[in-house]
Image (tube, rainbow, N blue to C red; front, side, top):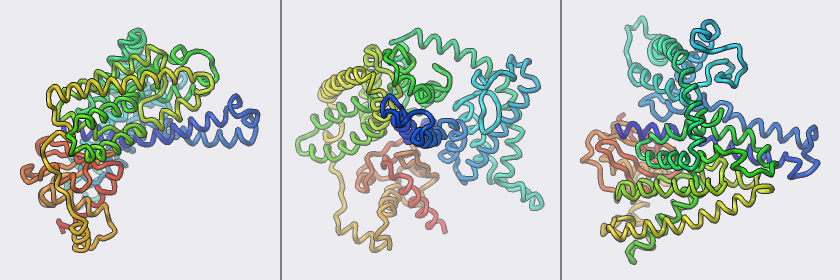
Length: 523
């Protein structure tokens, strides 16, 4: 069960990868096209203004189609076979669901308490050109989940030869057609009630102030290992839980308005406290890394430094923290709990002092979507943010250093195991034998495959943004972590027959080579 949830978390991350660049484009375009910042050249109607409006509109593509993006993205990560076909099936059936819902509400809206004649934006939304219920990302995730189940269950079903044309994706489309009709009826009945509940929840969270922010950040961080953290942040960031359309969309839509206002950001956007989870990436991870280095054995400090520096850079700049999260999660889970508490205190303290915005990722995203566009009128807020953050780097360091030494946690560099390393001659010899001298991904994939006990021991392969996810037939054939680290892995997460090899951002290329090696063995 845990492995399934973790695979869901990886699949969730795939669509989110597009948000960072699109957010940067919108933020940069908003700044460059603001007359208050660049002068008369950006006045409405000028060539400069029109060109940057076009660029900004292109940046909105991802945000305006988030539901479709998630409906397509989840099958790519969760379908056990024929992922591309599963993505197409999911898109078709998701739009079928929306079309059913649209017609049901058009004809029977009053029965379900929905005024379908009202304007889009009041519980209704245009999705793929269809006016339907605004179920947000949550709706697309649920529908995609249904399609993924149907795909994994029925895609390989063999029909009589004379019905062969209806096999595969066609069969999923047929079964899914009727399933979507049922789902549309259920959503038409349940979702309007849910929307009323969301409005009550929104009011409660806003009224809760600092306590609401603390609870949100703590749960988002504490549930990360299970993948359930997506159910915490997704409705807030991409759904209507706290503001219409989610904090990410709302912030981008009001970027110019907030930037030109002299009011405090907290007064303008009090809901922005529910988008500060990225602060722990920026200020928490460096403190943890310093504690790892300070507590490592003297002989291992150089190795630890080489291990943590790339991880810190990735976490701070891009907000990808898996190497750190899973390192101390499985060595000492109590440290992860402490991390969640400190992350919540950091965000709550920052919020109490007026820091709000869209800060769910890393430094690049925070700079381009917050600091640069808001600097003219709100630079004081970011001075406070950095000051609080630097203080928390020290707090993280002191707390983690104390706990590691007090309880002798075997964090990197404190264990006695030696890391097995291959020599350069071994590496060259392997490349010559395999005939892949210039394919570094192939060699890394081959090393991982051998560590897993060979292609005959592989049951299923998937990947997320940074991890290669593999299920095996016999976990006893899988070698120890050192065998994976020798080929560049940052760590290995083990859960019975399910394994996650933390590779890095080049994991798609490694996974492709891994798949080829497994397929070659099956021929």
